[in-house]
Amino acid sequence: MSTSSITEKDDFSAIPPPSSSSQTSSSSSAYFSALTPLHSVYNRFSQWRASLGLPNPGTVENLQKEVKNTHLTNFFFDGARADITKGLSMSPAFQTTHSFTLGSQAASPSYNFGSVFATQNIFMQGGVDHDGNVNARLNQGWSTNNVTKVQAQFSHRDGHNMVQLEHDYQGLDYSANVKAINPSPTDLTGIYIGNYLQSLTKNLALGLETLYQRPTPDMEEISTSYLLKYASTKRDWIATAQVQPAGILQATYWQKLSEKVEVAADLQVIAAPTRRDAIATLGAKYDLRMATFRAQVDSSGKVSALLEQRFAPTLSFLVSGEIDHVKNSAKVGVGVMIELSSLSPEDMDAQGLPPQP
Image 1 (cartoon, rainbow, N blue to C red):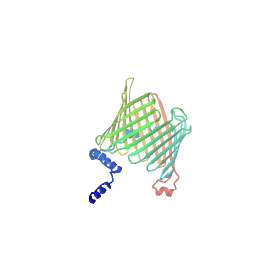
Image 2: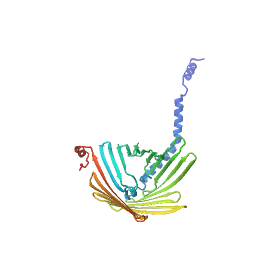
Image 3: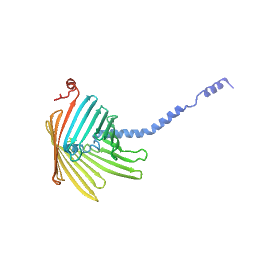
Image 4: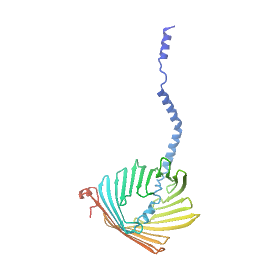
């Protein structure tokens, strides 16, 4: 045997076998190579979708935001009411509120202490009333598009305790939301809601909301509602519709007539086999220099109004009234809102805040 052949044999045996890391790298490359066409198709679809310039339709929760802000259903009160708010800090924002109600026909006298703490990504709100009922709310913003929300209510009365977990995502031209109310990880009981709203054009958005209820392990129910939102190009009028199971329809219309005047209409129709009913509500809101006036009338014979007069940036006086022509009854409410600050005049002037009266 020649010396050269021995050398060649030794050199061949000295070559190491393929390592496991190189095998893993080659398998990963093959895996990503198989996904490359799908990734390319997704990128092209995303680019085409972005080129359409479709706006974000907003959330399903705020589908009727403009109508609710114009009508005084969420603002009306009767009896006497006082809210005293004191700002303790501006950055981060921290304030406390003392709320008193007295003489209401719908609720007993009550006192509530609340506080709010907010930063750029976190919002926390809590309150406790004179009966010891506690409510809390936490919003955590992970990014400009992702927000996780937690709400809780605790009471000594049975059936009044509640925990709600929620996550909200805002896409370029869509919004999605999932929430769970009193979820139980052991038997999966609770209420689960998911909704999705998609812009199809610059004016039209369609969506759906699915509700899954599981009060007990052997009982469950699922239902789906369909949503529609149509807005003008200038966003000076918005029309919405929501079709719920069992023949329930709700349609709204809101229009901004001028910088100070807004009008809104709401129609609710129930066409269930055991019940047929409908109610229409018309409302208007007038924003004056130092006052806001809301008026509302519905088909059930109720006429109501609310005036908020601001005597100063930190002092407001409220008067509300409602007449029910069918029941021949009336309600009247008066209230005051006072905002205080622990900041010095120099600090308020540095932050551009109005001085205290």
